Image (tube, rainbow, N blue to C red; front, side, top):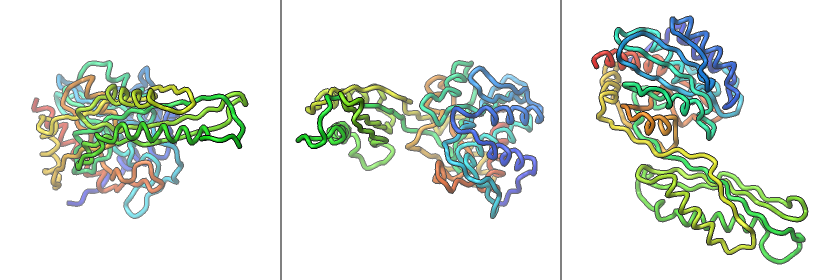
Length: 357
């Protein structure tokens, strides 16, 4: 079933994508979105965390639509070509956020919708979602992430990032033995091997993924030489960040090299899983079917603000938004505008069903 995008909704998503908003530099985009939401009749403001917030409608049922307004770095010229909007954030996740605003602009009697453009999702802090999580629990929450217009995400792996530091007395480059960089790599292999048992499973979503995200080694101040490892984990449901960190600390404690070793937690989110049989998930399934699609439920190895909000609120929650997540963080980021229109239609169908509560 074809779908045409309203010119005003096209202007909204294109305008939002056109404003650079790398994580922790979202101010201009936040102010712009607040102004656009106010034009659409919302009570719009910037909250204490720097999030863009728009309150649409009135009623006893409260729905939060939270998408992140920040992006990863990488400038991509913004343009519309072959029915697609090209630009950084078109998929991850300004497209879903703009769809939220468009959907909420049509009020539903008895339903109050809070649209949040959250800051710092692409940073370890997730400051925007953590601030919102301190507020009252809504009846439903939808997190804006690309799932495809006919897909609904119900689970995310957790994430843990550790920084491991090595330091030892300086030595001449011609001295025998491992360099500080080689010692760091040997320690990385030990940490990786400590998690290998949990990585040995057939189903990708159930695996504990361990990756070396970065390494640095150098001479330091001439008296001591240093190295740093940045180790990232993707953690399946049923395993906690604390348990994974304990295993890493045990591996580090057994290091047999010359360097002294430190370990610090840089960022962490617990795994999140919600029920695909919740009234919210059923509302999405019906709205997608009504729009001509076949709903699918998705589990993702990445993380999102659902990892922050689900344990805090415990309400029915899914992640949803137009776009193909294969384009996330890539130089080819693009959003099919026909799918954007379909997603707006689905979201409006979901909000109408919220009034049935």
